[in-house]
Image (cartoon, rainbow, N blue to C red; front, top):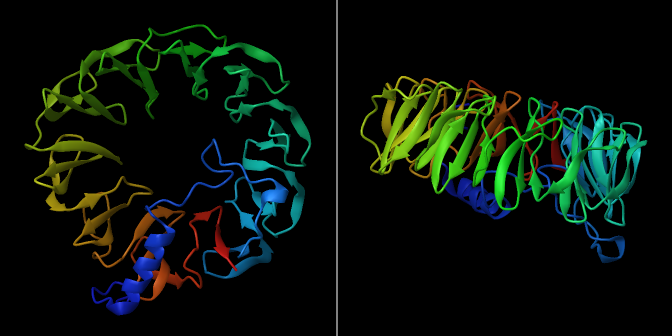
Length: 391
């Protein structure tokens, strides 16, 4: 492991970093057909250029588990992954067997046993894991089912259907989010508000609304931000230049150019003088002083004084940090689990993180130990124990 974490990279690491920077122009993987709706549509068959590489899957030991090549594959979800054969999409299982034939123009992840797909008329519908149509291909666009309701686009307006394809909330909105805990953010006539499962309006109107992960809502009115609770009642009237959220207990706010922390009942928390505060997850906050980043806890107490160029949000209990153009990993106490030794570093997924090290593109565990070296630079992260890789 010592050689993987060495600060002496040599020309090989430089070449690897340049190569991967050209492949990954940012830390995240490019969007693919079934991840992050709305997806880019695959060209029609007659417009499609033959793929220059084929894709399979490896396990967490780096062993090749699916060696049958596909023009493109997406991550596994509920035991199935979408694959592309020329311009057509279908689904495989973890044995690499085609369980739903390649007959779709676009294919998305399975969620609760259902997946959104489109046909070659570019109309969307929903299928089950046997490929049986549940919702016919009638829609110009649609979301996926959440809480048994699905947003659909009909003649430029959005509404909601149930799994019997019955319209249960009128098609009258300019935009809709998914339902969460019985409520949904919608947009109509340039304003945002919240509705319940019956389509009843349950909040005031705002210029913008976003759902926070503790069930509360951040709202914007006349350029200022406030908060609603889970029942859509005002907690903080719009009065701040910005608001960030942490587990419903503490919020980072900015007023008159000053960044600070407050409790949910609007009590001020003493924090060090800073140039900006951002929530990182895991009840940790980054605070910036003269271009360097440190860590605070929910009480505003210093966990780590500013020392790094960048600290990314915590995922699976770990954050990446950048120091002198190299990347490493921190735990929630701000302690280094690796030195800054990597040309690039991705978030931990299922206990492993992908990094560019001296040896190539590698996976490390949560102790910073090398697990295996990937045989291909373009390997992706693990989902359900499998990672996509060009063959």
